[in-house]
Length: 116
Ligand code: FES
Image (cartoon, rainbow, N blue to C red):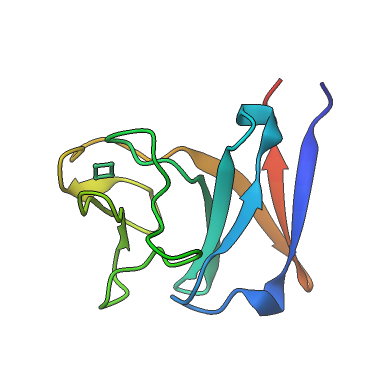
């Protein structure tokens, strides 16, 4: 399968604000990913907790903790570093979110999916 890309609008992704969700049919029928902006850099991950195979967001697109310093899983509260996807607190401490390659060009965010 050729590489796929997903394009998002840069203006739709604000610093430490609501994330942008997108479908990743390559990973399964209901698989989703998300992008967030943190310290003016865009990061994207597969939307699946490292503890159990559930989506992270408690409300669609809400990935940040109240203080906006970490990404949090709604189910058991695992905390992830926004810039690395590394779990620093919770039942999957030491594990990782699955990062997706992402670039930002002009007004567009491009997610690069390279699964076959
Ligand atoms: S499923 Fe995410 S912390 Fe348990």
